[in-house]
Image 1 (cartoon, rainbow, N blue to C red):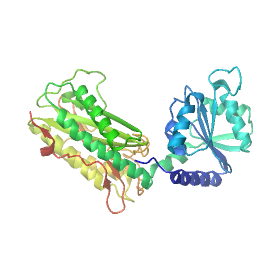
Image 2: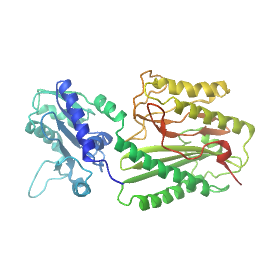
Image 3: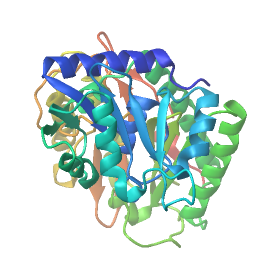
Image 4: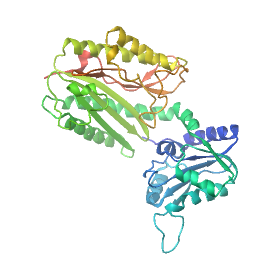
Length: 397
C-alpha cells in the first residue's frame, strides 16, 4: 500500500502558490498537525502546543520544516520511506548543548523569523493556519510582516480529494467492512461491550499488518449497547456495560490508513427486535440511504440533511434527531463541510462525506448507520459496504 506520491504534493504546492500570488501573500506558515501532513506528507509526532512546529511555504522559494530535535530520527525514517516531501528540515533543541549550539525551543519565534528572512519574506502578508503565539511572536523580529488567515485556503483545498486519497480510503473501507464482520462474530449476551471492541481492534490490526505491512494504520472501535446507545458519543461512564438479549448496539469503526480516514457504523439487534426497535431501525436505514442518493455533484449540501430529516419526521421520529446527517471526512475524521444542515452551496465532485442520520430514544437506544461516501457526477460511490438492513443485522442468541 503506497503512501501518497510526490506528485500529490507538487499539485498541492502549485495550488497554494497560485493562491498566494492571487492574494498578494508572500508565504504560508502551517502549524496544525493535519495541515502539516497535508503540505509535507509527514505524520507529526509531537503536539505543537508543547513542541512548536512550522511548515513554511514561500511563494518564490523551496519550502522548509521547523521541528523539535525529538523528531530527528522520525524524519530520517520518513525520508527513507519516501513519505516526507519537503527536503529542507531544520531542528531546534529542548535544552542548550555543550557544543554545536543552535536554536532552543524558547527561540522558536526567532528561528521562524530567520527562516522567513532567508526566504526573502521580510515584508508583506504571511498567511498562517493558526495564530499560535510562537508564530505571532516572530513579528517582533519582522515588524513589517502582516499575518493573515490561511485556514480558509487549506479548508478549501482539503475538501476535494484527489484520486490517490480516494484509493487509500477505499482500502481503509475494505478493512472497516472486515472489522464489522469480526465484531458481529464476537458479540454475545453477557460479554462486556468494551471487551468486544478491544478484541475487534486487535483482530483488525492483525489483518492490517498482513494486508499492508509497511503502512501507517490506526483503528478505533467504539460501541454502545442497549439504552446507552441513545447517547451518540457515549455516556461518560459504563466500562462494564454488558451486552444483553434485546439490546440494540450502535458500533463505530474508524480506520485511518496512511493518513486517510473512513467511518463505518452499523446498528445491530441482539435477538428479535421489538416493534418500536424495528420501526426506528428501518426508518434510520431509509433516511441514511436517501441521504446518500443526494450526494451528487451540484446538489445543494443542505438537501442531503433535509432529505434524511424528511424521512425521519414523516415516520414520526422527528423528536429523536439530535445531530446533522453528516460531515466531511478525509485526513481528519471530522472535517469540512461541517455545516451540512444549513449550507445551500453545491457539492463538488470528489468531496467525501459521512452519511449518518440517527434516531435516539432515551431508555431504548440509538439507531444509526454511517457510510463514507464520495460525491459523484452520476452517482455517489459508497466506500463502506457492510450489511445494514434489519434482517441482516439481527444477531442470534
